[in-house]
Image (cartoon, rainbow over all chains, first blue to last red; front, side):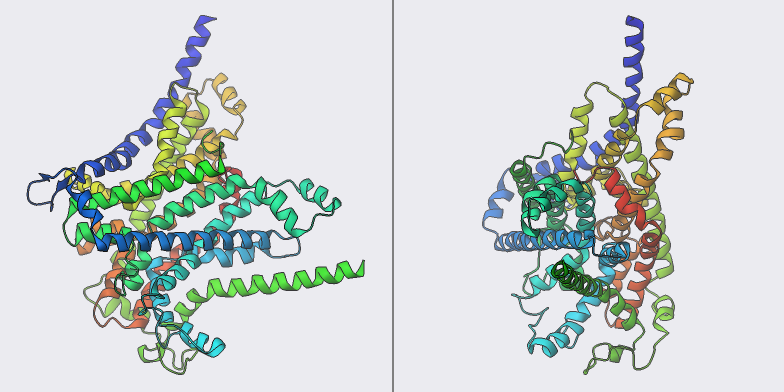
Length: 295
Length: 281
């Protein structure tokens, strides 16, 4: 009897071999860098001269840095508006495509999903043309409602030009997650609700949303993480302009390190970025009290 | 009864209108990109707006490859294929092996180690680019494909997805293979992997689009022109002086095609994969 249990536990140890490559590479290329970001944020370094340990000086500097403050607020604004818009739209599309009244669901779904697989750098070019003064969007707007803002040159509007492009690009992915979630709501719930005389809205709020709560949490958390780090649209369409109105944190981290050669300071901003995101994600998970992820 | 039918008819009409309109909005920019790539430079932003090209310009697709000696697009395309394929294969390797290990073996520390791996979801790539670059440089991988590919192949999302998938496979298959005397790794290759095909294909399309389109990491790691990947090449091309619009758009269309084609072939696995792996939470 002892012999059997011994061999069973030996068998289970093969699990270590299976997870070993992942553990090694994740530790070296994800966990070590995030720890070393904290270390680097304590130095001044341009990659060439020797590192100078400066303690918390970079953090003190960050408090008075107007460019960083602007970038931080722009990132929060960009992320908040995008995440809300993406998730509402994705959920609405998932509901629409899940309707029993609709045919050719796969076709409609792939139309909305198409932007997800397109290269952002590539479609960035066409969006830039569409936003320009004589581009498609201003011309159509003037035709329909008579006016159009200066999408790429007005500091109040440019952030929304970037948001629209990003929402267009990302919605399809979250839509698919919501579609998968909706498939899990038992049809019998709706039938019972209909017999009780529940209308569309009460079915939505009392059945659909509570049942797919975990899906919503997962979609929101992953959407916040991806959106916070968004880089390519701002880099390609606006280059952070006009007047830094679209210079989000990832762009600032990139520029501070690789254009200004302030690697320590850039690492400090990365730490701020990481901690903000960590807090947001933890609040999210706590709010929804999702116990299933990872169990 | 008839009033129910009428209200259903109205709902149906509204639904179709909304779906068709959304479909048009979502496809339009890509469609517009293709149309404009066939226009001449002067027609792209001309007033009044001309929907279809007044004269068709077929040359931009040829000029992208021939007229700009500083930009070697065939090479960029080849580089992007190499990097994407290797990064996806590595990602599938890490995700499948560790997903299987976490799901099918009850070793000590399983939950703890999985939580650690899963927690790396909270480490956004953009937050570690600086220390990661310094590390890559220290170990001599700056300006190499390995330095580009290895970090691009790691995703906790993939590990999570494959673990959820392997959980849903009954252990009986594995047990009966064990009784037949097969070793653990042969079981993984002959039984585990084949059952996971759909999940692996879903991960393939998801990860391929991320790697193919990623801009920030190539911008940092790659510094010699021969190693530039397509997304980076287009960003540089677009940033160049006097690059005509049709050529920029033509390069963009070329960059989008491989993934559009991949998606057309794999799209049905995508939703299936997400559904069956319980990715929805």
